[in-house]
Length: 227
Image (cartoon, rainbow, N blue to C red; front, side, top):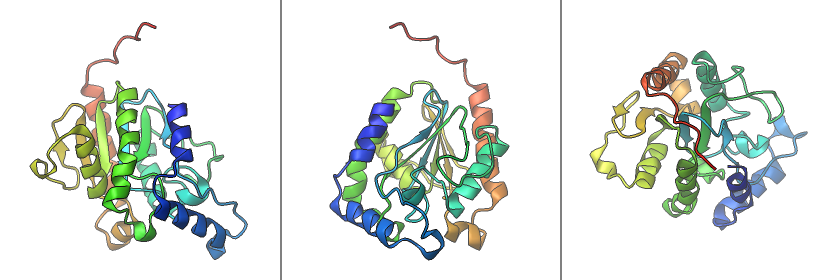
């Protein structure tokens, strides 16, 4: 998995996104003027042997694009990591930097896109360019029992990677699709959703508590593969 993450960080497939990430890293936000922004594609993060796979949208311009770690340093991450902590997947409820000591257990976080897009809206072609990374992650993670898709874009990207017909699967908060692995939907913990009350901390907690129960009810981990 570390080699795949190295490829993600070195990716230059989407000129518009690379330009945007670097521009944000140079201009910065006033509150983060003393930060050395990451400014590159953001690698996935967590436990490579995870049974829970979390698929987000893309890094935030002043969140993961600044810190270099998925859902770290912005409001979305505050909601997500609290939920993961409550469900026992995270060692602490907050995420501020790559060096804050946060450890994920039995969970892996990736995204439909690994570069921060202008307006938080990656183009379809840019999502297609990132799709092979998710395909390879899935192949490298045979223990996954449940996938949580944060938002419709992540939901549809995952279904396309799986070769599923998107229109055959309804998106809704805490909707469960009986695929293998199981697919659990959630509204994205974006500032727009959390500030309007479309998604509350309790609602997000319930999704990951449900994911935990699905994992606990699944058969035991497969026996170690022979080398």
